[in-house]
Length: 88
Image (tube, rainbow, N blue to C red; front, side, top):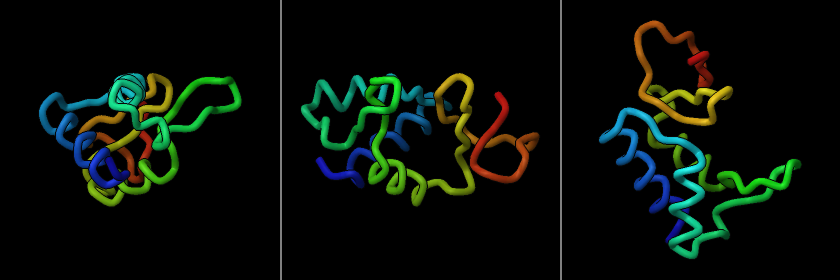
């Protein structure tokens, strides 16, 4: 599975559910044997890798936001400020 394939799966999940948690992406990729799309952060946790994040961002730069405190992406709403990050 390429980063583009995984990004398309991620986008489909956001389209279906309205949001997607990073933990769910990590679980999906580990179960699919695609750990190469992940990396270990400073705390020792597996997180989405740069190549996958870049591919995902290309699909939805203006329509999806990252909710940093809760580690998930969701569909942008009118109340969101400009930029990729949202408050909740």
